Length: 362
Ligand code: ATP
Image (cartoon, rainbow, N blue to C red):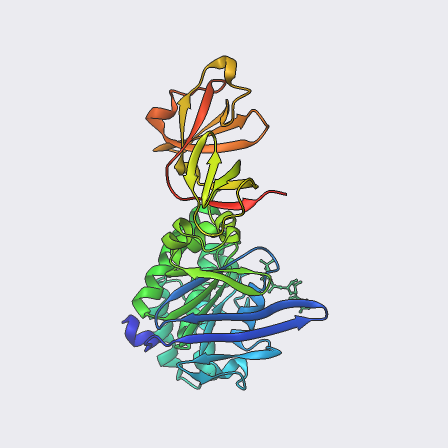
């Protein structure tokens, strides 16, 4: 039925060399991104990096100063929004308040001269798909926020779009509904095999939903990769710091691609400054183990400090350690081991012997 409702097969979507300026602001400064048919790509990046601008250009609500958007190799740039075969869901509930859920879903098909009977049939089917069976007669004000977004999704799918564009569709919802809808959107997107571009500022959302995550910075693509690769092998220090929790521990380059941190020597991954340079070593909390330290030395030696806080996270506990120089480090330990290091105890950081990224301090 899903195939019938959408009649879709994934298309490839390509954004190439997009530039867009507003006065002196370069919202997009040469942005490239390519989505494979049926792929869900999440655009992630700090506020103002150009995510919404890129999405609006794909939708046809805005035009690039330079560059092109194409579907299966066909340039869309000359086409207005209503000729682009795209479905869109926005952050704020954008349903027509004076139309029922069913009429909202049937709105696009009505513009396309689909018969009333066919529209009703299709609306029922799509509302069922999004978990809203039997609610076609309700008005938006009779629906919760999560239900309204479900209807908005059904409405976006009703025009049999080739591409689905989602602009922070979950950010106005409370946490529980957000998690539910996350899974639902992903399920429906995969069922339809619909190529989807998703804007979010929530990295957990991006990492949990997307086939690939496009990290943007200042109007450009910084890295686009599968969530695990982005997390484990960030291409740049920016991505490393932006995605997931990251410790910045003081260290010193002690040789070719070798850094000393917390009294250990670790191999450096990627760019490494000259020997002797003071750097910050980037370490994930799960790459940091702890060992007991002697009370007396806790303040002095590199990599030693005191447990300030223990945050129980279930299987793991995050221990926040304050080092002698004031730096704070977070270490995630299996909860049964974390109890060995109560708040106030003296500890030594024990980084896992794996390659690390470093950035120059200064
Ligand atoms: P956020 O996560 O805060 O929504 P974003 O990554 O979506 O940010 P954009 O909304 O694309 O960022 O904006 C990129 C830059 O372009 C920002 O500096 C913004 O102020 C600017 N900008 C966007 N639209 C306009 C506009 N219509 N007029 C002037 N400046 C704009």
